[in-house]
Length: 166
Image (tube, rainbow, N blue to C red):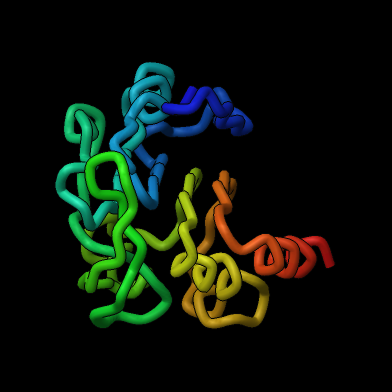
C-alpha cells in the first residue's frame, strides 16, 4: 500500500525460487517506502534498490534496501527533471545515469524481478526503450514485472500503453 492508498500488485515468486537471486527496483522513492517495507517482510532475502535524485525523498528506504542517489534514464548526462522536493514538485538539473550503467554498477545484474516506477515525464523513455528491438531491450535489460505510475501527459500515456498492447 503506497502513500496515497494505491495498490501495488505483483505475482508472487515461486515457492522454490532462490530469494537471494531476487531484485526489486523502485524508480522514484518519493518519500514513500511502505511498499518496499511490506515486500521485504514477505521476501527478506530479496535485494531492494531505490533510485531517487532528491535526498529529502529517501524516507526510511535504507532500512529495507539500497538508495541510489541519481536520476535514471536511457542515456547518462545532466538533464532538467521534475523532481519531488518536500511536498511539491520542482524542475531541477539532475545527474542521470543510463539504466544499463546503473544496473551494472549497483545491482550487478540486468535481470530484475520487480520494478515500480513513478513517471513524472522524463522516465517515459525507459518504458519505451524496454520494448522489443529498442535500446534497453537490445542491452539485455529485463524486468519480469513492472508497476508504473503514469502522470501528466495523457496522450503520451495512451501512446505508450498502445505500444505495449500491440
